[in-house]
Amino acid sequence: MAEMLGLTVVQAHEAIAAGELSAAEYAEAWAQAAAGDELNAYLWRSEDGDTGAIAVEQPRIAPVAVKDIFCTEGVPTTAGSRILEGYRPPYSATAVRRLLEAGAPILGKLNMDEFAMGSSNENSAFGPVLNPWDRGRVPGGSSGGSAAAVAGGLAPWAIGTDTGGSIRQPASLCGIVGLKPTYGAISRYGMIAFASSLDQCGPLTRDVADAALMLGILQGKDPCDSTSVGLPEALRLPDREDLKGLRFAVPTGLASDAIEPGVREVFEETLATIERLGGEIAETPLPHAEHGISAYYVIAPAEASSNLARYDGVRYGMRAETSGDVIEMYEATRAAGFGPEVKRRIMLGTYALSSGYYEAYYGQAQKVRTKIAGDFAAAFADFDFVVTPTSPSVAFGLGEKTSDPLAMYLNDFFTVPMSLAGIPAISIPAGLAEPAGGGPQLPVGFQIAAPAFGEQKLLDAAHALEQAIGFNARPSGAPYAVMDREKRTGSGEGGDG
Amino acid sequence: MLHVAKLARLRLGDAEVETMVGELSGILEHVDRIAELDLDDVPPTSHVVELENVLRKDEPHESLDRDVALAQAPDPAGGAFRVPSPQAEA
Image (cartoon, rainbow over all chains, first blue to last red; front, side, top):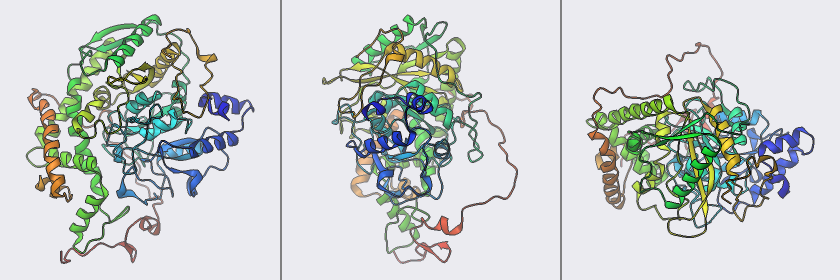
């Protein structure tokens, strides 16, 4: 079984197509692996309950685990919040429906920061997810359950959502691949809304080829989401082996003090690997990127305060019992149902949108957004990609940053600008580094961003770099063998262990 | 703070208010850095993908059955969502 679980999804599909592997047995093996979850990654597993309308009788492709932000017909969907406890949606999200139609059984629903607000998964109402590399550390967030499940051998691949880094940062902290596609590439229908102008669904996978395969299934225009457009061309699996003729931009002034030394070292090594593969590297200014966090923490809470107005104890979810009038019922329900971070962001967003402050906050943040998008457009006139570390640090300790919301927000420093610009960005594991405070080595992610709808080129380059890096470390407790790298050794150099 | 909480229909306890005053001040201080930028002539971005007038044909289609829609409500009654009376004594 360990051998079966050691395959990437692309490899498993090849084995299924060749008649060497039964899709049903493969799905069963993963269901058993998921049942061994000790990381609190799953909030609900198909094994334990009635799968109802989302049952797949005859699996055709690899089973998938789904962040609990996606509505699944008849199956509990909480978005990590008490306020949706017991909710069983009457329909499935388009992303889920596409996976089911492709023949992917749903392994279960994955833990997350409440309403996707967080960078550590500590904001889940159902307890934190543990990082499979070190159970005393966070897996990142908000798609922490998705990243931990894939890294910890509890799912072959997973879907998550990224509003300001919520796919890329946990992928980085867990040593896997995470892709935030271009805004509009995948339908948001049935994906519980946080910040509608930023939210985007995407894959968390073991390697870049699996991410391409998953994106191919998920992408497309959807009549149920008028902001969806899909990708311009059908995706193929990435096969590029070099980076000749490609230009990579490193934002000027990136060597900020905020980056951990170990992370910077791996970043520099990765730049050297790019050059060895024939890629060119130069600095480019992104003068407004440093204001990304400020703009994001106005825009996202503002949109959230509006989106979360719907949780009022009337149509779905929990209701607090009160003896008073309907207003008191709303207030009591929201007080009991929302956690501290969600309340903080609702307050921040309500304030930013309130009369007299709208222009100064929301209006100004939207203008900064224009400038950041303009910075990227200028960079892409000269370069194919912009590269940064995904996160300023490796996985931090549970409870280390919970008392300082601003310090937590700064985790998103490198991922937020791409979200504001709506462009695609991928995080790939680039090596291991010691945490700033000492301790065993942990994964470091490398982020590559491309122009809007440039996913194919992005995946091709990420694949070439991934092959050259040859990252094959795995958490020691992962119940699967290190994947077979024979086909994937490429240049055979640059491994960071 | 209490005014904003009222606008957001959030009831905050005294301890929550106290913690939040400090936290929100710190966040707003960081956010306020963008107030200093001169962006008067810059158009705001509300949506990143160029789209205009996404229209569809106005054709009738199936929608959720009423009983299915009501099944998730905390207090459905008589084919509707029941809520406490707006005139109830607090």
